[in-house]
Length: 64
Image (cartoon, rainbow, N blue to C red):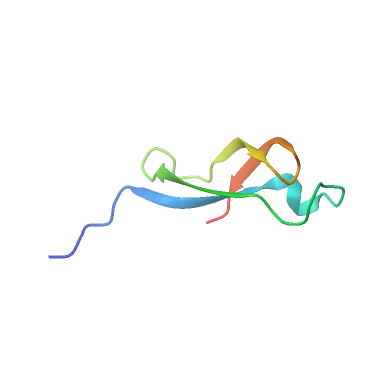
């Protein structure tokens, strides 16, 4: 038997300031992976996480 598709899915969060900021500490974009519940959060989520490239807590948006 096949495994049923779960409610929780893996998502990737990406820093919103790294994409547009050229005066950051180093090259690259901060990304985190986490899980979310498909039923409770059907829309894309935003979390405030630490960005090592910007050297401060910034808003990270879901990309996948």
